[in-house]
Length: 489
Ligand code: ADP
Ligand code: MG
Ligand code: MG
Image 1: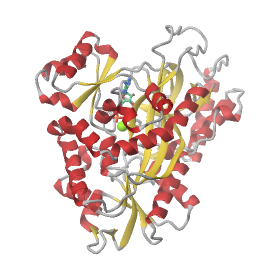
Image 2: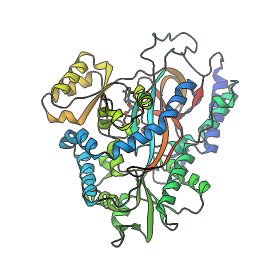
Image 3: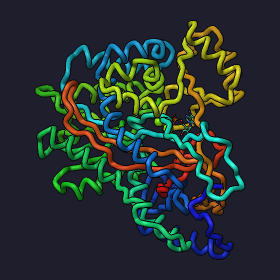
Image 4: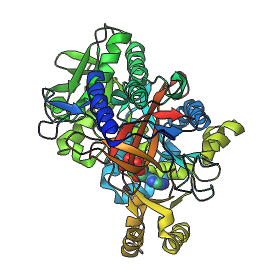
């Protein structure tokens, strides 16, 4: 099976030595997270789960998705600013999904009240897998067989739950080290430099500059306790390298509801006497993030303010799985992207997705799923992993919802068949083991603009998350996936 160590054989003793040294290398480079026992402080930390070696990625495939990312950034910005499109796509969802209904209500209020801050800022992560469905069957016994057709297919576009830029930034160096210990020959360009944390930080600094008040801060809205807080902190470390004068603060929803307010005279968002230039959400994407109506009031208050929100409420809603499914319809991408070639390049990354709402369209999609459930994934409009339904469970769930409006909670997506490879997976407290794995590739992008003007648009790097081939979901924080980098071939 394909592996970066093709034709290198290492005995167990050597592997154990590489593992030990590489773990220390990761610690020294800061590939770190808090422990499950002490998620609230950084005095005890451990290395974040990562793969011992990088995964094979065709150079052209990665280059292609990086090249279209600015267009994806722009597309999602335009979608978010098309109220009519959002309303049409989400009208059935909000009837049955209380969480998205609450987000929608906030959008309606701020739309009716009128724009307080024309600028939207997004720090995005666009996720893909290397689909090999079109290839001839993979010969598992053949050495490093690279399938003839590896196609990058989009999994989802993340607006808030777009983590791991911080943790992955030092990892290419760690992988260059482990490969060297293993005796693998490679060019630097095969394990390319990658610092998405710096690019995202630059985006936050650009937002801060656009706000135009040097005393105002960049505010990270976070959960606490948060095991992944060092991933967030890496962004502000990088902001410090971009511009030392940007004040940075961290607050929770609770802090904001107790001490934050909008100044009456100009709607500036203020907390602890500090005006907020950029409000960067690292929480607020799951129902559990809102402990009570008070937190929802706080979300509304923040959306009403003139702080630059990253993301805005309309970006947040544009990131739902429903919108991504609706963009797969003929003509939907083209509504926003007038250049045929660009629209085609975007569309090439899509697999089929179907609405299963009540009605003929939906019935047809459900029939497809019943006929061959292994070919599909049923997704709900939630973020952060653990929400998808696969295989026979799809049939079971669909049977229960036969004639119910509930169906609008879900969309049906064709299943991507990712390229399997072998890799050693390293996690603190577990024995490292060689496993058959698949990889998800996230491309980070930054976009800033008003409804009709682009101010900033960049692609800032990548993160790979690798998991056992048999694991349906891929959460890194829940221990299912492992940080990774590409080895370009
Ligand atoms: P979330 O917002 O919860 O991360 P995703 O759409 O990323 O939702 O789904 C979670 C995981 O499920 C992904 O990381 C991927 O491993 C798997 N997955 C999602 N869609 C597909 C698909 N079409 N084919 C194969 N696996 C998928
Ligand atoms: Mg997501
Ligand atoms: Mg995801």
